[in-house]
Length: 186
Image (cartoon, rainbow, N blue to C red; front, side, top):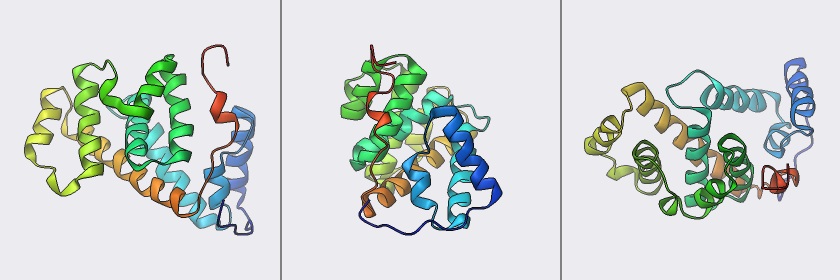
């Protein structure tokens, strides 16, 4: 990273979270390490991330990761494209889908639900001032309810913020993400 801050004292909760990462995936993601200089910031980030990405929702975990990748592709965020591209490959079992979403989601063979969801996330990222009721109506027509629309907007907004933070400090992905869940790689 271009900005290096000394690690702060982590609460027991944050230490336990880091241990859980080590046990589950074998490393602590660099995004968490980046926030480790301030336990309050790390906890705020982690709680918000876990709520958006892991809590019950009308959106599947795969759909939320797809939004993360499309937003990160538009923003050209190396960290998030690498990390969340790996998650799409893992959750979908389709390494090609992960790569298509990274490069150009419009080239992917998506059903109407996913196309509407990703079109909305892309528009919210590229031109938020142009989002109108017709865009929300398109989501409703694709089967999303108002809570789902909230979740799509929240996930897209979170990754817009995270992408900008990652770019601001030149956050780099853990090397393990690059080979994860590619054919023959796992």
